[in-house]
Amino acid sequence: MKIAVSWTFVPHRWQLVAASLSLTLVFGCGAIGPMLTPHPNFYSLAGARNTETPAVPRAAVTAPTLIVSPPHAAAGFDSRRIMYVRHADQLEYFAHNEWVDTPARMLAPLIVAAVERSGAFRAVVQTPSPAAGEMRLDTEILRLQHEFLSAPSRVRFTLRASLVESVTRRVIASHEFEAAVPAASDDPYGGVVAANRAVQTVLENLAIFCAEAARSARMEK
Image (cartoon, rainbow, N blue to C red; front, top):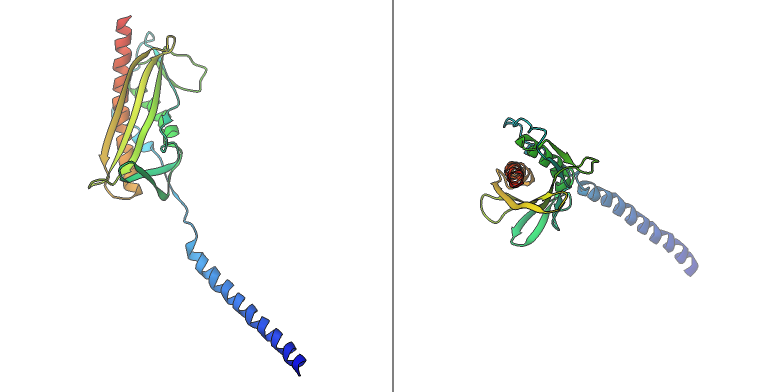
């Protein structure tokens, strides 16, 4: 009698366990589906390239050649993450929204294009390159962030630049550029549009800075 009860009870118990596991898997899969990580949105700084202002004709062959070093970036701004600030000195980043490349890598060809348009140099060359030049431009991104510290929010871009004489390594001139542009919307896309405008403004001022510094250095000789 006891044996009969034992053998009929055990299978029934495991049947309940199996049914419970099946339901868990079914409903678990249903719960997992909507929680899949969405594909990230990718943005670039291509819009910072100035295509509206006519380029100045290239300088004479006696003008210096400028070598543009790869830009560096301060800690926190050396990744593809799009940074924002809600509290002073606290960096955060948007989820599922990224730059297509690090801001420093995207900035290099934009610097070359902006300085070329100034017409102050015989040639503007981006490293690595076998070309040699009389001057070198070193830059560092100090910040590129979407700030929610006031209304409307704004994007701040700060760039440090140094123009160096290649042979003597003497610093001809250095300057820190900054632009803060209001964002049309408080979301990643609004920030990206404002970032492109801020970068374009800084690069236009950088080109003027390089042209004037190079001209002054040549007059001193």
